[in-house]
Length: 128
Image 1 (cartoon, rainbow, N blue to C red):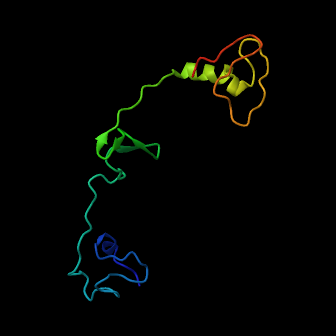
Image 2 (image 1 turned 60 degrees about the vertical axis):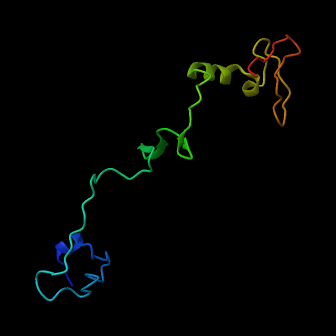
Image 3 (image 1 turned 90 degrees about the vertical axis):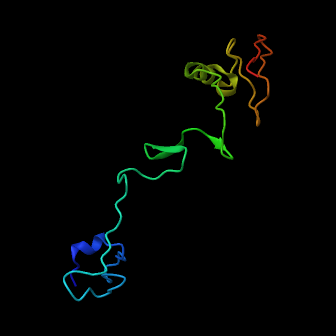
């Protein structure tokens, strides 16, 4: 049975291909339905709903300002610049397995030590 296209905009539309309407399962008797209720249009149709204090960035939910129990949480300052972070990755013995001064290899540990100090040249890890 063909549906009237107007029925897709009705609040009573069950969105079921086998039922035309919740009130009139087989279709109303006349051309015009007396129970027709237009569905409410969203305020911003292309904007997705997000919880308060968040926004969508490339489809990911991102906190605008973190809160705990309704109170704003201060954001910690970044300790290192991106360049300093890359330098640590390139030269620190935890990532390279070698002393950054004399290139002496460090033994492999199951859990890394707290301090990386080189017994060969005396280099000391001052990051901790």
